[in-house]
Length: 111
Image (cartoon, rainbow, N blue to C red; front, side, top):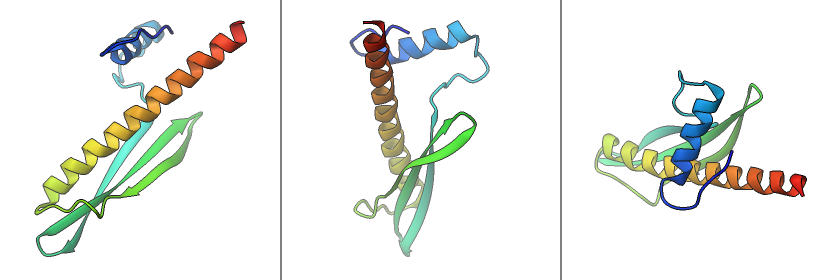
């Protein structure tokens, strides 16, 4: 899989890989899943945890478990939304690093 540089290149590479493999049922081939757990610290004060799991070879492995106690919200929905965005951003970064590592490794093996 060839990855171009620039904005949107990762999405284009993932779409191309999905079409190449014929995996059209699951539009996300991201092996990382984000789970969000809101916690009420006291009435009207919420924070949340997120957990990132990686699925590989039929097994689940927890790669991050983050508590966002430093960011509090007035509602459960706001805490959940902010934490989901943070978790998905972290998972996207992990995916980019994984793809970069695979590309470097395949170039190394080809040389």
